[in-house]
Structure formats: structure tokens, C-alpha cells
Length: 232
Image 1 (cartoon, rainbow, N blue to C red):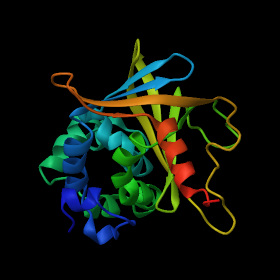
Image 2: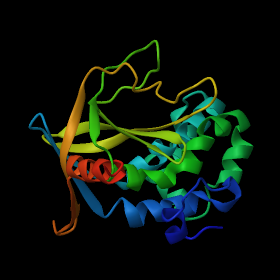
Image 3: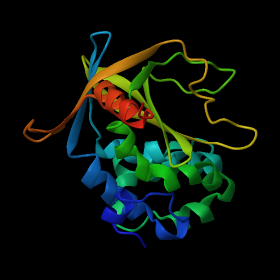
């Protein structure tokens, strides 16, 4: 089993056998929950993104496994969502094994989310563009205000975020799209018309507002591009 630190430092996707829901929850508590990610966008918008306990199960799609089994019966699906699901994972009562046993096909539908969840903190600090998302039912039922995305470790990683109040946002959906011979991985983003450049990313502590890192994605890209140009 990986440690939290090892998970963060991975250079390629892990084997499912090296992951547990408890490990991912600890990862969430160490690399996401303590921080506010503030994006200054080129259209003048400021986005403050934070991660709460009740969002964890939803991001991994855990409730959808229960829904496939229990058909949206709230008294049966509630142990797999929000704070209740979060606590059951922390207590060791909700595990990958129990999800597989609950509904094998439902588990398969969220397997990639579990495997690639380690990439979420990385895409939050690396994107150059955010999409003002327009739902396209012909592609998917994804519905969110903005979408952060990045190509990392051979997959497109997406985080759809939604307005909570003012410029406060919360994570609404987490999507993985693998690249194959027949799929370039851009299904969720290819035809989106409203791409917004990110001017600045600040990472700060939720507890006291202290800024611990500031990134200027476009400047970083310009430096990277100049370094990769052949010398004349």
C-alpha cells in the first residue's frame, strides 16, 4: 500500500491494489482540504475553490455504486455519500472491497476515478486555461460552471467546479478520460467555446489565509517554451 507522500510523488498511475479509500481520504485531508486555491482569470473573475468533507465521496462517485444497487432509495444510499460516507471510510467500514461486493459493475464505472484521484492536487496548480462550461447532452450529462483540466500521466483529468456563493466555489465533478487508439481523450473539452486564460494561481491555508505559493501559468509556459526552442 502506498503512503500519502508516495501517492503525491507518483510519476505514473498506481496499481489499484496499492490504493484504499482510507488512503485517498487521508490524501484529500493532507493535499486538498487544508487549502484554498484562488484563480485570477483573464476575464476579471476570481475563483476561490475549497474542499469540504461532504464532497469527497461525490468526487469519487461512490454514491453511484450504491444507486446502481439500490435505485436511489435514500435510506440505503445515504451511507455512501456526504459526511456519513466520509466517516464510514475513516472508520474502515466503507472500502474498495465492500464497493466491489455491493455492485461490481458500478465499481468498474468509478475505478478510474479511484486510480487517478492522486492527480487532483497537481491539476489545480498547473492549468493554463479554465473552461466556462457549456453542457452538451450529446456528449455527457456533466453540468458545472467551470472546468479545470490537464493532460497528465497519459489521461485527461477534469475537475468541474460550481459557484457556492459570490466567488466561492466547490468541486462538483471529477472526470477521467483515457487516451486510446480510437479516443484522443478530449471528449469533455474539445467543442467547448469559452476558454479563459488563468493569470494567477494562489494556494493559501483555509485556516488563516496565509499564502504559501503563487503561480503565473502563462509566464511559466513562456519560459518553458523558450527553453525548449532550438538554439540558433
